[in-house]
Picture (cartoon, rainbow, N blue to C red):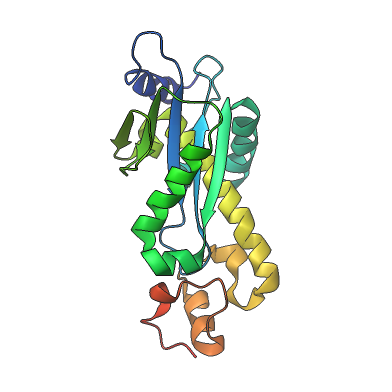
Length: 204
């Protein structure tokens, strides 16, 4: 077992009290893109059947990340994935949309956790909770949530690429790359763009 993985397990266990063993990790993906939803995941992983290599999803190669996401979903005691649409992001802003998305995930868990660890965010849920800075790197459960959320959102953007190929969503996942911004200026916005995120570009 990788020493870093064991450290993440011990990190999560420090928040448990006597007789408790269920930690939920919560993370988001997609706060920064110009297009697509923000996606969150809440996951409760068993603490005695460990998947090696779980960490911040951004630090894992894509092929390995996809394989890990499948293992996490197979072994999870419970998990929920939620989206908040570009329209709602424009309506309530990305911070509130992220909090809403995280809350929807936790509220959707069928298994009640003893404690909820959230990546750098304070959310209104009926459980004991901790906001963890760099939680996706420090916590096993938050890291697992980050992997599942990222793989789900990446797949979603690949599907959107088939409908809106001019923006190259399969490559940029909605982020503001040079090609994406060029397409915005030449073609204009599509229905999954966040209007509040692209208002500084001279789009059609």
